Amino acid sequence: MNSHLQAVSLIGSLGMALMVMLLRFRAAARPVNAMKIWMPPLGMSTGFFMFAAPSTRIPWLWALCAFAIGVVFFAYPLIRTSRLTARGGAVYMERSKAFMGILLLLLAVRLLLHEYVEAYVSIFQTGALFFILAFGMIVPWRVAMYVRYRRLLEQSGADET
Image (cartoon, rainbow, N blue to C red; front, side, top):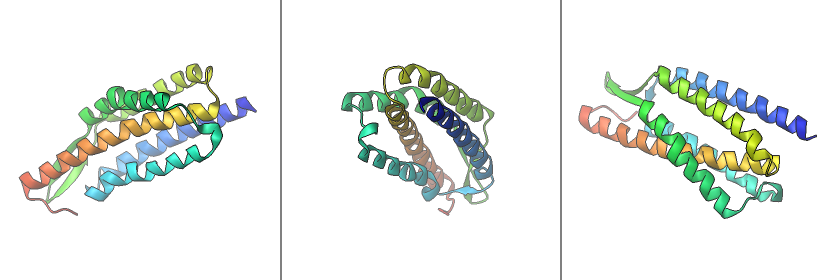
């Protein structure tokens, strides 16, 4: 059963990575607004309901470490490669080849670490750790994006769409 869960986890990770890349390409063609910046972390926060299941629970220290790793090591490259520009009275996200490369690198790191971590904790706890790590990555990235977005609105006089 464990190998089936690993296969499902791998396929799910690859599918989610592909979906994120496609959504990022499509999003570059439309203006950014505060709702579009905040919805991913808000939507992702519902994943914390997984901890209602005892099999996913982990020690608080592990959770704090996973969150800190997401903030320190994974949010920074996303913050550095995400660019917003004001055009035609609106703010747009610029496409970045580096951004897609970083997403692929993050996926590879996740897949490589997954096997290592899973040797010490259950597959459900591994999923919980990587969820918290991802949440630690997305929150600072979106906060930085929102700060840049507000700054661009003020500087350019663009409309908040």
